[in-house]
Length: 296
Length: 211
Image (cartoon, rainbow over the protein chains, first blue to last red):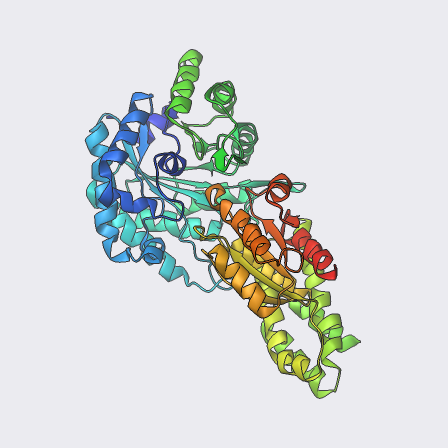
């Protein structure tokens, strides 16, 4: 397989997979349970999910490691199993897809707030990401995606850690923005322009956004990234904002609805398109059709 | 009063050392604790609240201002007790069972304290029974529940049911908030109020506590 970054630089648009968390909840993961422990307890379920997304046409499959940094695992008493969990996650996806697609490690925020506004030292967060990354890189990944980041300073720490451990690893970093009357910001107040600038400087290969918003707002976000800086972007929208219907969360944006907007994302110059909360293999299948019709 | 204005601006700047120092100075100059609280700390947090609501500032600035507010409150606390300064009310807050997201809840706690409320923060992953037990035991007027995960929201309904079962529904009011929470959901489960964001949550709590 051609290196991921080469494909991107060549102008290819790559289809990534969809949600993991909301799919797991649908498959019976108890709310409040540790999704990453499934790498140890139910790897066959995760293998099935990876295979489903692969069959739907995804070229980038993510590992179930969003909360698998030791700082996050500690809340479930699983920090000691950081290596085992991350390694198993990568091996599970490889069993499903072999070398036919790119395996991208998914890494979420540490859950801690940095000093001075929080109480955590940058070094503590760096070490947590480093430990997770070493296990992931050793197990054999093609890329890492630091996603659902809300603090640009933390995202910088993560990106730098990844580049220090594996300089040739493709590093993607995406943040979650909220629309406000004054524009798009993360909850920490970071703008898209700032994000592109600082993450590029930190060494990120691909920047962008995931989560928080349905596809229409994500198209706008993609356009703002393009205006801010010429560099590859990754966009993973939610299937809209969820509503509780009869006690279960329902994400309103259907595969068809979202697929109709895929051309807009492509025209906004996005290199990696996937789905976040509420998306499914059906969504990815619809995205694949839409991309196919564009003949990019 | 100039000294109290300086406390308010020091708070807005997140200068916890200065706010602590100026508060001690105000106390030494025999300014009533109530006045220091209202015209220094609460006045400062009101500005922060407004700027945050209007997206002029964001979480880091609010958290820094909160640190400064707590520095002042620490100095005032014993005096507020000895001078019998009434609080605006007592509120029990927490993130609902199964959910560990707490930034929103922490923000509401900060702003409620900045508005003069006595806040008992139960943290994350709080069982419905614990909300009710604590509020009952502490004679709180309001229970505030936060959720970020849609799947954990049903715990909020449980709290309302428990209050009902214990005949506390009128006496202890409930307010809910969090990204997936809606006014409609609040109505559906019989919560007394919905907090769209931290600033409006504080306004709703003021209304609920006044009833």
